[in-house]
Image 1 (cartoon, rainbow, N blue to C red):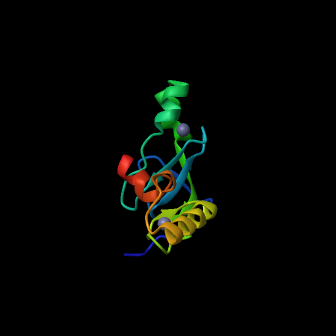
Image 2: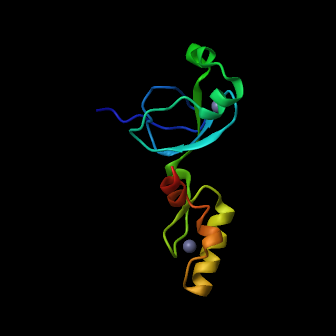
Length: 118
Ligand SMILES: [Zn+2]
Ligand SMILES: [Zn+2]
């Protein structure tokens, strides 16, 4: 099986398979979501709510663009959680190193937390 490469800016149709875990943005409406490898791109719920026209979405408006592959995330070396944002990862690292515990206000931004909520 050939491994699909995942590059920032690649676009994928609704109902196709997610090639790599990471952050995606809905092209028509700009809604950001995190998908994991092997999932199927869903129709964007925000688009359906805003436009209320599923026919339009079926005609190719449902498109997801890869914002950031999982590999490009930033990891806090102290607690091992991943963040999309380098600054947040650094904040977490500083906190973890100084307090030897995790700050809930920081780790709620981690990708691990997002995945749990989905
Ligand atoms: Zn959308
Ligand atoms: Zn940390």
